[in-house]
Image 1 (spheres, helix red, strand yellow):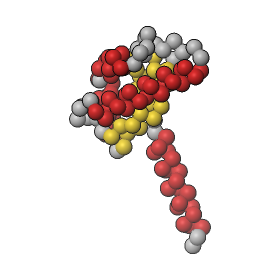
Image 2 (cartoon, one colour; image 1 turned 90 degrees about the vertical axis):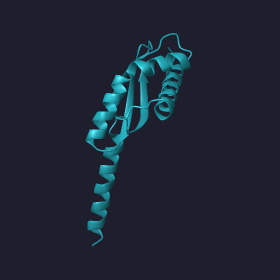
Image 3 (cartoon, helix red, strand yellow; image 1 turned 180 degrees about the vertical axis):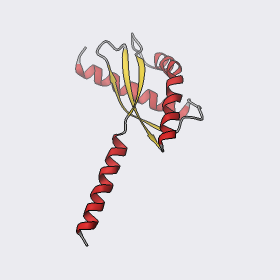
Length: 117
């Protein structure tokens, strides 16, 4: 499969899951979840879906559990809304890069304020 096609599939899967999370999924365990990236295998059989959750560790745990339990529903949604021969099996993974970036920025501000004394 060509790289550009795989990139388009990744983007489509990301957009559809994001739409589904905003409009259709009503699990109370699901916090403020954002799909940050999708990596689909070359044969389109599996897709790693990286998500970011706004909140503490309990909200992360609850949101990932909600996504895991809704995996079949989400896959069926993709099957109905995407024109793909094979609908990928979804593997939801945490993406903590936003937390990491915020922590680094806080450290840089602290260093900057200490240097300005």
